[in-house]
View 1 (cartoon, one colour):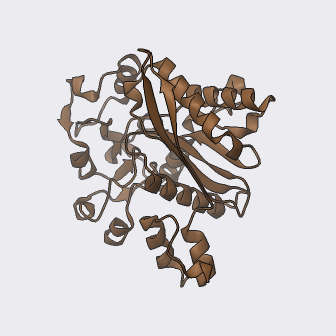
View 2 (tube, rainbow, N blue to C red; view 1 turned 60 degrees about the horizontal axis):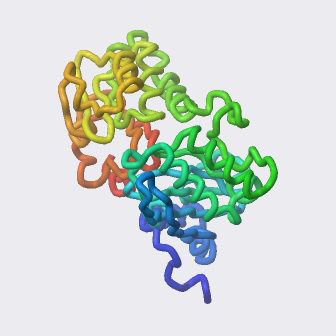
Length: 331
């Protein structure tokens, strides 16, 4: 029978997670096969003109994993590590999130394989608009609703919704989330990921009067990482380490988060140029002795290789799938 054939799109972590729960959820072979494989996979290559006149071929993906509960929903990331396997796993996780939250959505994810720091703003706009042209027929408020993710932001979503509406010949504000408020975006959307994590930490430690005794380590200082650092420091938590994609900064006595946020807002430089604090690697940061560890960057940073070295009492996951299934068992 068809459902007994080899998986169409191999997502190893998806398969591992499903195998762990199939007995608990009484999944039969047909259900397991359907859940192991995404419903629709788009892999595209399209040309983009660079500022110097040259043409670069851009590789991009969109995976719509499951739409049993409604139109699929999920972010678009710009990163060098983007590939079909990663995007498939993230789409699978989005399907779980929407269903567990009892929302009328399925799960999807998208990605463009670039380092956005290597492109000008004009080039990024052409890359963003080109992506929409390639996937236009397969997205829409009743089909699939993209959103921002790693290295994408309201400006990029604004370019994308504008391109979509140009092609569609009509307004369609429900097709993209995370766009600027002036284009129909939601107030508070930019801080919503961090705020969700903040509420969890706030509730867990509500009986601790002196929050300064609680040491927090945050990997990643993008949208989610920076916002939760600011929120936690404002109510007294001691943030002792944060990092960007290149390096971490550390101070056992606590970092001045307001100063660091200001530095990031006016400088495009890495934390490497911030001389005030001790420099550590992202790997070292994860293994610091702390009360709360918050992976807020990329996935797969805590694995079976380093899980035994994690000293945090609590891990709050703000990144997508930062802890591997193998690490879960060890932790």
